[in-house]
Image (cartoon, rainbow, N blue to C red):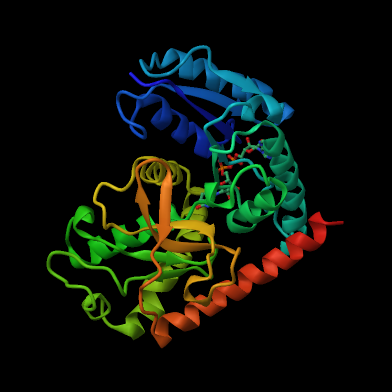
Length: 334
Ligand code: NAX
């Protein structure tokens, strides 16, 4: 067996973590031969919950999990020697809270965590930001963590990607595994652009997917808004935000990023620093369709042709991200 990979998880006393940690410990993300060491972080107020989660991980008797499981409220300790850092912890939006205040609270958290990582992380450490506003939190972190190359800092769009893939499968009455190359562009927010223009199945060739789903008007009025608002729909029903599906998406993101996608040509969606492809401002943390290769590498698929239908959506989500970035940078540079 290989050496254990060390995974730091923040917000580890929260609900996504409660679904994610068993996936990491059981081998269903990195495979049944890869040992895993967990370093859990949450705020001091949650200490007893975090300790309880640690006891449950021990009681799981996972053959691949290194014992004892470390837990702490000191980020230096959680991040030390981590190969992978999953940032779930963030300041939640409270009723009546303005976006500007949310950006300020999270700007402070992700600046601090960026600075800590800058001191204790390795150059090869891979960082996945999940806590919202995820794209902008990842951007803030990367500004303050120059020790980690920007390509090694990503944020989660895979939940949106999986939601779209599943919706297409349900609409076409086919298996999810038969749906390929859906894409999520832009912000993990209601301005994201869920795109089926490059998607295909064994029955629907590339270029015919919009028509198969009822045409552009159907996409615009129904399919796109359904994905954009899916998180809000789950929240309204469960009175809690998506957690089981978020954990699953985090597992998919990490597996594909570290081990490569199962098929070499498959497109998956990841929030990464823009390289200027498709006219998206360089450096902006933007969800793109990417290819992943073994060894923690990925490449933005930069040769897709964007028509006027898609272009409109790309601009809206880019503009939102630029305004979030400007607001976040204003507060963190104070
Ligand atoms: P919970 O509120 O259940 O858990 C969050 C945990 O983070 C809490 O235990 C809290 O004490 C901790 N925390 C807060 N600030 C921290 C800090 N500075 N350092 C360490 N820990 C800290 O939220 P949960 O449902 O688990 O969701 C976690 C985050 O994921 C939220 O920000 C949520 O909005 C975001 N999501 C992002 C998604 C994405 O696709 N990018 C989808 C799912 C989810 O909504």
